[in-house]
Length: 239
Image 1 (cartoon, one colour):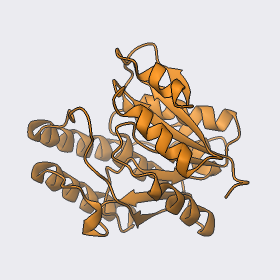
Image 2 (cartoon, helix red, strand yellow; image 1 turned 45 degrees about the vertical axis):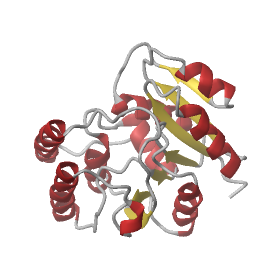
Image 3 (cartoon, one colour; image 1 turned 90 degrees about the vertical axis):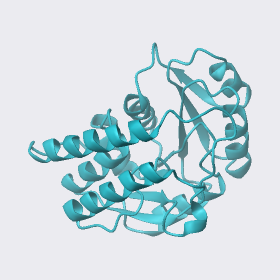
Image 4 (spheres, helix red, strand yellow; image 1 turned 180 degrees about the vertical axis):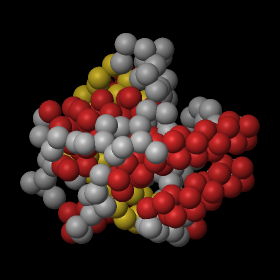
């Protein structure tokens, strides 16, 4: 693994209280990996804290949203010829111990993407709220039906990607509902994926913006987005 050029992408919006600890924990666990924080229009000291912890930082001119922020990370990885990308979160919910398992599985399998699931082993779930979990259940059934893959955690943002997946997502990446839509995109462009169990924890500082009402709104909109995209021609990607 030490010879594999690895980039950890951390999208972050106003995470000054979390980002330093997250970067430090990752660098301790994976000292040979590079950490890239996508500072998505933060109005606090996220940039300064991340840089002080030893991360590269790309600052967006304004809040572009999670999809565009993550795609910026894939474009950085593609331009600089990284072998593996790890998509992580800047709020500390994804434990760094899971990164090595994601990378090891990616390198030892024939899959292009390995997603960390909190639902394969129930100990991995920190306590997802009922309405959000209901939406996840509906999405996983829909995506499993569309792709034929066994999917348990379609909204997980904790995943490892090989070079083929990096090139795909550097060129085409969903902006509104990136995780579930990306699964369909992978399937339609011939990539493969699998899931492994990981542990996720509640954020230590700050609050999630996802409320029960937003969970329902998200579920309806993402299902419509997925169904509409199925009617469109699959994208042709230059690899």
